[in-house]
Length: 103
Image (cartoon, rainbow, N blue to C red):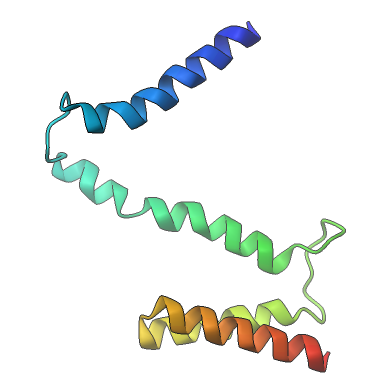
């Protein structure tokens, strides 16, 4: 049973990487699939960022004295204003380092 799941996972993983490169798939995906793929990065990155900002070492939600929340909010504001990934990362990291030095 376990070996079957492992093999099936390997076949699915290989297929998702091989088929687009093989020429067996159409060059242009249907419009519905293209529209759905726009939300994949948001759906994948949001839980990672929320987990990194809110969850502490003890696996609890850290609301009090959490400089990451302030840095994330400021980085979000910079991202909305500038639309620059590099500037957002630089400002977010600078703010969190500054807050960690202060608190």
